[in-house]
Image (cartoon, rainbow, N blue to C red; front, side):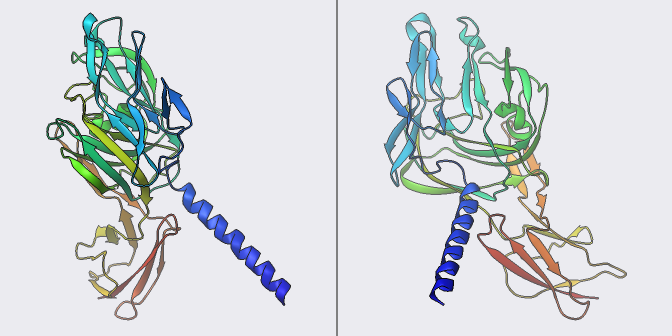
Length: 364
């Protein structure tokens, strides 16, 4: 009997480990910013994240530093003046950290040709609903400049050959999976996109504020379609990037501390449709039985959606995100009876972290 118990305990331990690994796989790499095993200049750098560091005219400027964090270490980034002021080649650069690779390009010695951005990200197939980030923010002009917390995911490979520069024109430089070529609705490449992609989701928070103490910010993630992404990227910026493409509106010394990033997967429904029409009276936050009046000769075809909302793009226009339809692995329906027992809808978070049950009584 004891041998059976020991074997069962081993099986349960293996199962628990597999569940833990699966849950962790749906989080960003080094989300607590503890792996500082790379170097740039003489400063340690994160191994899996990239700072907007600059090598220019023989000089090196480090934007990302290791600091004591909310737990362990954290990432610290700050806007700073880069270039050679005595040669007339200088501008304030945005301090940010990203899973993608920051890039800068200057054609010859012309500051007017300066452009910059972020390429790539990481392989990714998950669909989180919220990004939680702990931050502090300091600096001399925090009331004049937005900081940015950004998540976006996509399918395919974007390509373009020119990007907006400091003078308002376009500078030629070829990039693959550049941020502005993916986020066409909210921060699109104004010089044109040669090969567009299918953006799946976006979560974007920006504000002009100072935070002296560690503060948790929860960024909702909105969905443009039902697609499952192949890549994602995250950018945490101390200043006006990515809202400004060519280093304008930046203030030397504005800084951001970032720690303990967590992706949250929800088991709630944002919108419920019955027979293809949204049920406006549906309450996504109740456990009580809800009643739906069925139109004459109506059928009962139910669908749930998540990630619905709007974001204001850099031009002040509203970009609409219609949400994604929950699939059979996330939402199951046990049919009921018209004027009888209710329909039971069970929704599971994509990472298995929670479950929510809705009961809908349908009456004719």
